[in-house]
Length: 154
Image 1 (tube, rainbow, N blue to C red):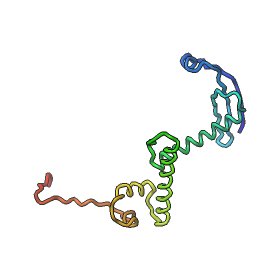
Image 2: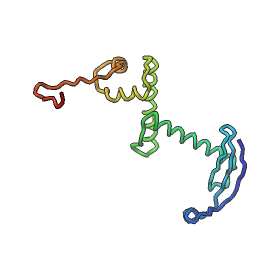
Image 3: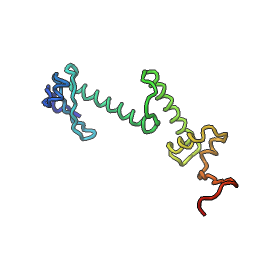
Image 4: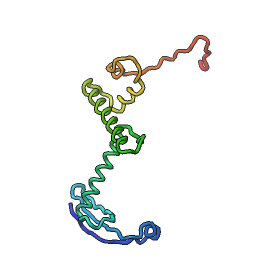
């Protein structure tokens, strides 16, 4: 992991310069863990190049965490934007995820967490033991045709 270059630049593209005419700092960084070269742009000239690179790495971890939240916890949007509302929604989603993962482990279920969540979401108000709901292998729907209903096809 190391800083390869720390430069002060001005954007050369007209529209970019129009939107942001001030100088920028370009930090080229090599991450030996991933064997990748990265370039960071910042307007912070007071922190060291290493600190800027570390901050971007932390920020990337936060981005990955939110990607995980969207994929695993099924949060598509936040209902409110206040800090307390976001924290509450995330903690509720994490709690549900942990509870379902615990149920999966304790009941030794083969279904994925996603499948279990799907099953629970459609059978939420059924008065049936959870083990019975989750151990049902086939969800067959009876095609009951009332006597006064004519068949469309033979």
